[in-house]
Length: 244
Image (cartoon, rainbow, N blue to C red; front, top):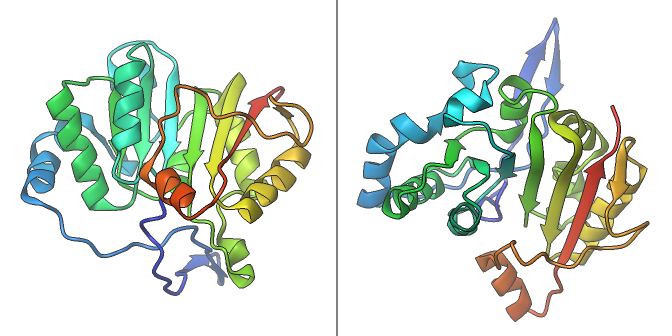
């Protein structure tokens, strides 16, 4: 769901029983060539660090070879900030989801360079990953940093933060776990706040209708730097799961 993927294309239609339901995607795949290093990482590192939808519901302790708090990030782009967080917080396990293969390749290449063992990666649609692979009540944090804002009003339905998505995330978080969002689009920040403030089973960590300060452990991403150069503000929202 990174901002890399912004070229619009029609949403697919999928059969549901005897009817067809249009599936609205919050991302669009952008064509991009993989470098030699990225391709090599996909071939050599993916077998150890990659995760597949076909694996079904994961045993997270088995996937990482240890018990530790699990942080899942949707749409990590080229993966630089995820690498930095995994280096700085080795006591946590990180799962990254990204549909852009060059980004996945770059992340895996850097995982190998840094000798990290606490990252696992999906190259799939996050909605499908959440539905098929992530156990309920298993995540300590879910991160959604600078998703595509779909800034045109007619495209707002494509924004990933919607009521149904908030409910999906709530089920995947542990009680006391956090859904952490960040955006440099004020309108999307307001949309996120509107959706999350009425979502059942959540508490705004910063207080009612309040945005959170950027935590020290969240790296400044290239999208944030670009937004700041353009004069955009940056808004963090952090909501805690409070109940079943």
